[in-house]
Image (cartoon, rainbow, N blue to C red; front, side, top):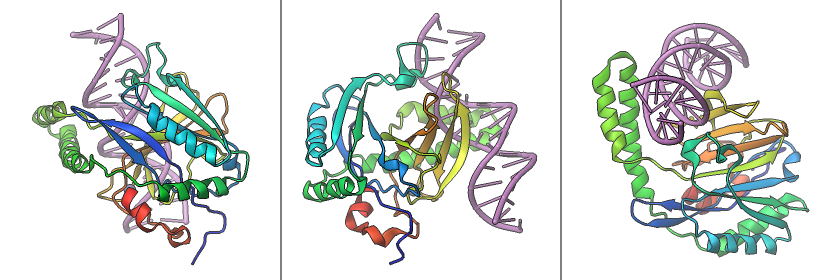
Length: 263
DNA sequence: CGGATTTGACCCGCGC
DNA sequence: GCGCGGGTCAAATCCG
Ligand SMILES: [Zn+2]
């Protein structure tokens, strides 16, 4: 019962469409434990939905209902991402996005708890991309190995990698949320290793790339902050953890089957 | 001394 | 084909 002093588990819910090669899949992602050592987080939170199709209305409807039940102001705006405007930038993000600003006007813990309760009431759809994920995992492992050798060996490895890459593009679900915080890395219960930093165009602040330190887990996240508001941090998660958060706060919030199932 | 971070180079998709 | 821009790698470095 070692409850961390200034940490709270925050559960978010995000819905996204995961487009398979033939048909679209509606994935329901939840159990978003965020561990924060400050109180500014309660100011504003925005959840960003990446969808690969245009008919995400039922999902949004459900979310809006959910949020409305928690007495919060919800603003849904369909727009193109600011980084992926119709100008010549970020060509691989041309998929339409839906920005959802979720601004609770009460302590966020209650909202989160309500969200969590609603979570439990609403059943989770089975993940249809679990098998695909395994497949992709194997492929990516080999790809990385090839790329590793490519730096020292040469072209054959690259050829092999290209053939494997042309097979299928690994499209892992990404969901991002922006918080108003002073620290850039939010302790979400997982251990992250920074593997890159890039200065994106039109943004004055660099973007950091993190990866889960677990070996078999390849969840990535990127952290950047808005140029207009340096206090706003956008954290984008990509992929799903194949393990439980190895941190010392876990049992306080009862991760139970929900977290183990979803993360 | 082991693991995380830094940081310049490299890869790769895509638009022109 | 070339250049651009974002993502990743990995040697060097830092840090506990
Ligand atoms: Zn992980």
